[in-house]
Image (cartoon, rainbow, N blue to C red; front, side, top):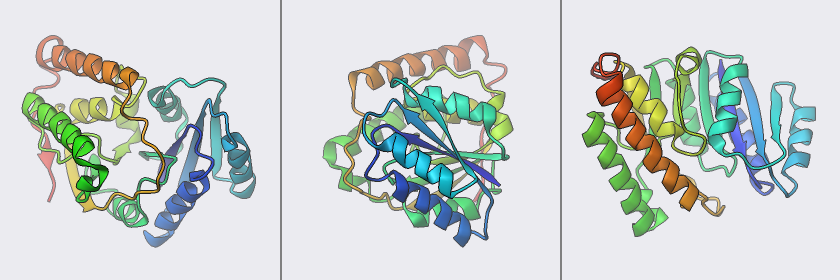
Length: 241
């Protein structure tokens, strides 16, 4: 049983495809029950209308509506509080995650505390984005001694584990914050290789706001994990193979 959070900010073109991918993956993984929460983060296109249609068509789809854009981390916090099922995953509303990746995540949902996917076709994003992602991941690997292939991996979490976390991020850095705090507490993780889907939706990851927050969250993680709460975060993560 999995709660799926779909982040939607002006995703009228691909939102329905994203929901369909989640439902198809659940079916292929053995009819896994889903609780889908779509977060409309202040969209100004037809996204709210599409969400209403999806809610009318499927009783397990519900939504959180933001009148203004607040950032994905805010919506994720709200979704954690109301999630129905023991497993929890967040996906962008641009159908970024392929059916194969989602199916593999769902099939392996009980392998570890964190079940993550990493992309083997990152170079298709261009040398700059690929290099930036590699640098970002390398910094986290070396600083916190975590052997993740990709820090911002799509990931299945334990819902109750997330509810016990105190996290700072309101934007995209929530993924790194979740991973570091869970793994440095001795959490287990299982990694799955897959292909990133390219649906031609423009990336919003490279923005000044996201960069500022990424730096802020990283520095606070260093302070918290290495200094103020080092006794809590001094355990080695366990990789499951």
